[in-house]
Amino acid sequence: MTRQPSVSVVVPTRDRPELLRAAVRAILAQEYPGTIEVVVVFDQSTPDGSLAELAEQAGPDRVVRVIGNGRTPGLAGARNSGTVAAEGELVAFCDDDDEWLPGKLAAQVDALADAPEAEFVCCGIRVSYDGHTVDRVLEKDRITLDDLLRDRLTELHPSTFLIRASALRSGFGLVDEEIPGSYAEDYEFLLRAARGAPLINLRTPSVLVRWHKRSYFAQRWDTISEALQWLLLRYPEFAGQPAGEARVSGQIAFAQAASGDRRGALRWARRTLRRNPREPRAYLALAVAGRVVRADAVVRTLHKRGRGI
View 1: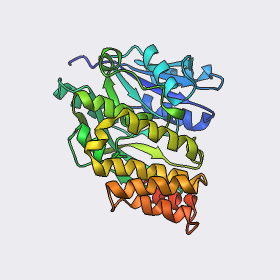
View 2: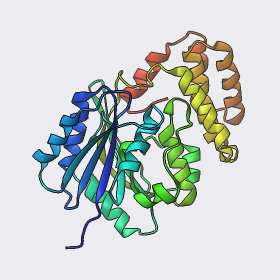
View 3: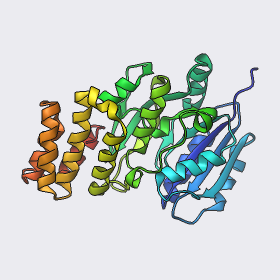
View 4: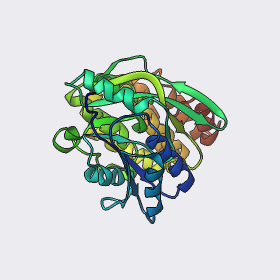
């Protein structure tokens, strides 16, 4: 049997002990013949060393390491702390409130083995919100930078990422820690990775992603607006994709409206409509700014359909 590459799974966490344990157990339970190392990174919270016991219960070739975030506080710094500490040939991410479904890891490792020129592989997700479950699968085998500029492609969730460790250390690099509040750090990471080579995508929903009110960005509209404006400045390539730029500026308009900044919402909505008059986020932002509908009601409705703003 050909030796399987070792895999390190970085799991940033903060104050979600029960969900965290479910996430770690699902990783350790993967039917994968190689070594799986789970690096749990506690961000702005006290590390729980007892998590190492989960590896003993899972059997041989399973390791759980618990560390603190020694870099910038927040999700980006926590991901990077785990990546730097990881010892595997491949590095995967998993959020502490998500769960890998059976077969996820083996299929992705095989996909990388079949495409030695590739550095990054993703898969579909199964979104769970308020009792509703929706599969989100992207019907593409290769994802390019232009694809990502046109559309965020929510199916490409960070809990699906599997990456060659060499690409993180001497290629496109770690997660950017300068993004305000670490919001959209996963999207920026995808854009940067796709600048060098297309990303592989598997058309199967292999990760259960929970969307819930405990999301750390649920009501942080000012942070969301600031981070997305940062993203537009960092990626001038958006200028060549009017619909993609309008999508991001529409998100900014909605965030401004949700935070109560009516003037800012109107300004960004006008910018959005100049780039793409059909962008629905501009009209949603105007409706929220005009108090026709509440922002939280819009978000709840979209989440029940497995979508977001």
